[in-house]
Length: 144
Image (cartoon, rainbow, N blue to C red):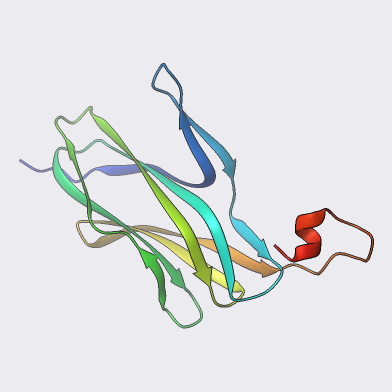
């Protein structure tokens, strides 16, 4: 018997670490990315999803979609997981490296289960003003 699970949470963050006791540490939770110029390349981000209250084998997929033209910036391959019993849970950590965002604006993080959209939430890309002369660190002056 297959019981569709609930998505307990989906989080965008800068990094994920796992302690010796098995607990996850999510670092730098965010909902927006600032860039000096576009197209902008974001070095790395993570999407962490926890599934629970289901039973059976499933496929998760994550997409990042530009709301302006509906183009897919990136999508994962199908990510299989299994919940052996109704009280089981499974956490999937997905790393995205060097994502290119062609325009500022709203992008959608979409979470699919067995090719059905379960959740989507916005991620804003904004253009940051250049630093004033004599202010900021070396990265600011280089426009990173």
